[in-house]
Structure formats: structure tokens, C-alpha cells
Length: 103
Image 1 (cartoon, helix red, strand yellow):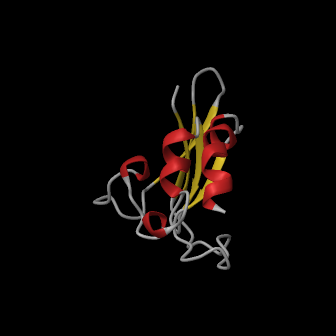
Image 2 (tube, helix red, strand yellow; image 1 turned 45 degrees about the vertical axis):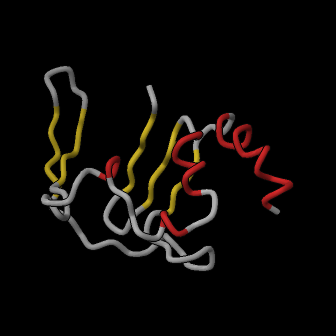
């Protein structure tokens, strides 16, 4: 598999619309959509009528997920290529969903 696919990985990831990164799944057989604990939310409306919802991060001491290196990711094949070559990443972790984009 490696000999056949390694030379193609750049094209797969660089031309993707986005790459889903399942940060906390221990393997490819584990699910990632699960019930999340309820959170305290604060809805806010701006003067122009736009609406936003703010929430408290589950663990304020933890680094933002953009700098987060989940242990499950570093043990998976292709994980480094996913993170370096993909122009956009949609991260799913136990605590949050994060959009990461180069631009």
C-alpha cells in the first residue's frame, strides 16, 4: 500500500475541499460522533442584528486545538501528511469541533 499510495498523497490532500481529522478515536473502527455534555451558552446580538453564541471552553488550561497534538493522531498512518498537506482541516475531538484553514 505504501509503495503505491505514497507518491499520490500530496494530490489527495492538497486538492481536498477539507480533511476531517478525528482527533480522539483510537482506531479506524471507533466512532467519533457521541453525546457531548451540555454547555453553558451565551447568545449575543450585535447592533446590526447578527447573532453569535459564545461558550466556555471545557478546559481553559488546555491549548487551543490548533496547537493540540492528540495522542491518537500521532499513532495513525498518513496523519502527518493530513495535517501538513491539507489546506483545510475539520477537527472533531471529544470536546469540540474546530475549523482550521491556512488562509
